[in-house]
Image 1 (cartoon, helix red, strand yellow):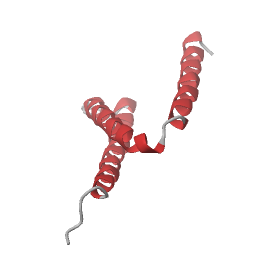
Image 2: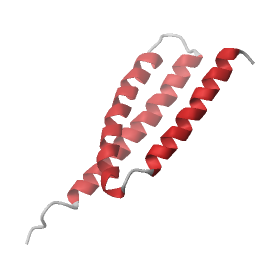
Image 3: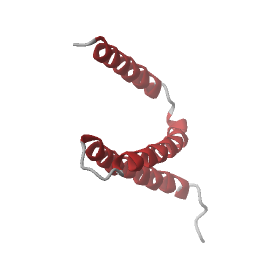
Image 4: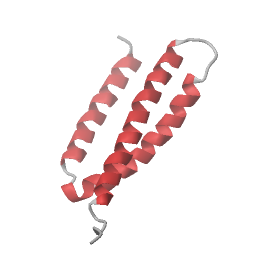
Length: 95
């Protein structure tokens, strides 16, 4: 294995462990607002995936870009649905 692959795997492993540690420390009251922010980041990833998948030739990058578009779209739509449902809990009910 080359040094670049070993370095990439090492960084990915550290990022995974750090992310899991940070997520486990988030209190439930902050979970939904933080997820709303994460949806905005997924929207940015969606734009990047559209740019990658927009090539004229069918390459590995185009296929991976299309998969990224599908997954980021599911994440963004699902996140906004959850956020909307959470906000509905705070609206006053009509009498």
